[in-house]
Length: 307
Image 1 (spheres, rainbow, N blue to C red):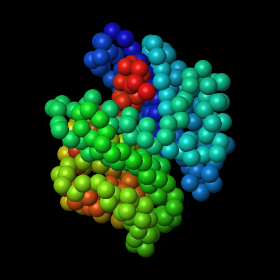
Image 2: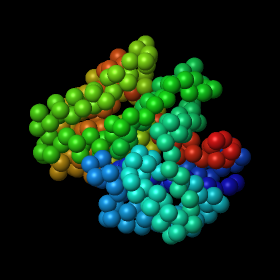
Image 3: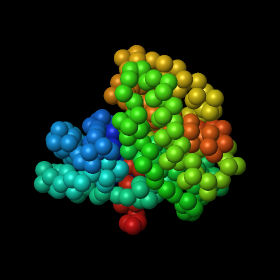
């Protein structure tokens, strides 16, 4: 039995996956999350703030130490939307290496989509002829269509829950005018881009914080239960009903909801609006949530030397 660790530095949060494996089989896995907001102000200022650098360096060091103390023989790390967009993204990567001796690979949107897709395939309990995947992050959204063998279409769009919140939401709760502008902004980015995607898919598989939070909120999970989230299915009308309830609440009221991490409460409305907009634009009826994502995909590609 061998132990491995994977770290994902996203726009809104940093996540750690710890796995025990026997050959190619995952025997046990744990995930940890720290809402570090490395992407705060990157959309408007183009740089990671000094505070953001410091917070994320400390968080990364803690995750590396946790993985090492747990007994991980290999630790792999990736950084996504915010770090690749920031002028000083490489500075963060260099400082993190100096501090931990662990290399962080800044991956592009295509690679992010590929890792997420591979992770989802690992989590499927039954084979399926086709998979349509949505990954709503803090800074970007990845949409991937494929089958068991390969990705047919996979793209990344600069429409994320944190990015869109920073652009459009200033009042608490969000005003109807702000929500209207937010939806316009989402559609402006996605409407033309989605023309080439099929319209005959019933379901979409969602990964990432927005999708897992939707499942946790709908079940009112307290505490969060990975096993109850993985494979959970909701139809579009249920998600819209949940979204409409949330957008009427103040930030403090949202923080009290079971299933919603308080540090995600300020961006969940934007995240849900991205989700429902994509589903409506593509006439998709159901969302199935996966707890297997780009962390498992990163693990698989590293263990199998896939470029």
